[in-house]
Image 1 (spheres, rainbow, N blue to C red):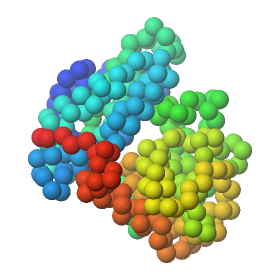
Image 2: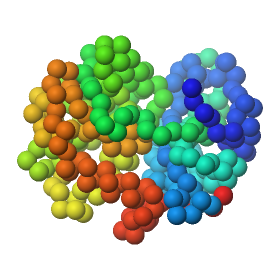
Image 3: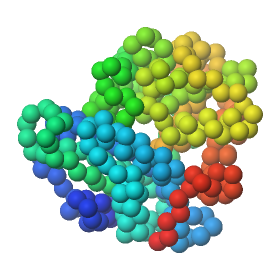
Image 4: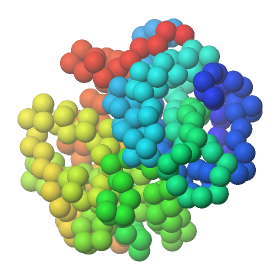
Length: 303
């Protein structure tokens, strides 16, 4: 059961969560014509009056770009301002996950993106670990990741997540925690809502943007941290068998943070993960505001 934050951002102001309601005829509900973001925020361990937002500017930029794919203008500064208002209204006392959402709010029945009303909202939930930090079991999904020629994969378009939903449920109902999606060319793409990394011979390898992945913000952060620590990062196509013989395999995402994969179908993977552990340790230090090197990634909001 989700514990929702008491206030949401809805139609330009903070309102009680229960009052933030849309019509059953809302266009985005029927056609998936929306785009969302996901952001984590935590109380500052060193100052309880501050809330720390991780990479708020990057999240706002991606959501603004996603809105453009829906032919909608959503100003980055406006997103940040709304986040500030909402966090100050809620004054969270524990880690939270924020879900900003831009959507076609029109009540018409034609599937379209032109001459249509749009709106923007944010709600939040209390959220600790989305996946077990000890590791997850995965299976290769029977569903394929979509191609960018059929859906704009550079944005977090809500309608695209039907594939993620099908894959996740298939995995869980067959006894696994998570699904791994191949693209239509048979290469590893991503999990149901996370990017994937492997380690082989000291190199960090991840599917490139040409493999129909979402350009994850945690993914980009991990690549930057690894590179600055002298770890070679290679972005390329990855075969499914490479996952089975890799030295380390892990997932990244806003909700998942950095989560190891301990088993893929019948193959049990090594629990010796020195590179992943070092990256996870540094990411925690950054998100808790304890890293001078990456202080620019943290937005402090006084509540």
